[in-house]
Amino acid sequence: MLDQFPPALKQLLEDPSRIKCGVNIRSSRHARLSLTVDDAARLAMVYSVLPAGLLELGRMAQAVDGPRLANLGFKRSVISLERLAQTYLGKPIKKDLGISDWDQPYLSYPQKICKLLPQLF
Image: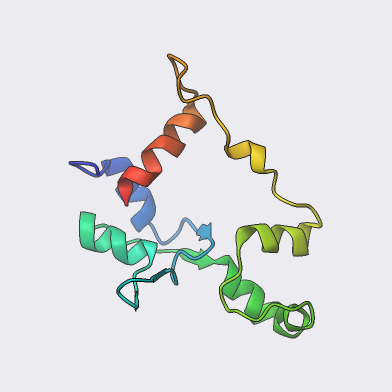
């Protein structure tokens, strides 16, 4: 976990004029405690960051395309990014995009971001 949250990232996340899209950013469930603890709530509790301008892609899909999704067999309100991509883009997300060589001496910028994100939560 970070000792201090990066100020530039805090400013970006709290800016309501910049829309941040994601899947399950407002509805993840903590299984053992049986209570809802979403990413935004976690940021508020741990770092006093109050994210604004969040767009939950699964809820958006349900709102604009609910009957079609139900006909396709979507039974849950939480829809994975993989299923959204397959449904709307007609293409699966390539799993190998998340595979990196973490032992190399220098990480690329995207690798650094991927390595940092889990430490935020």
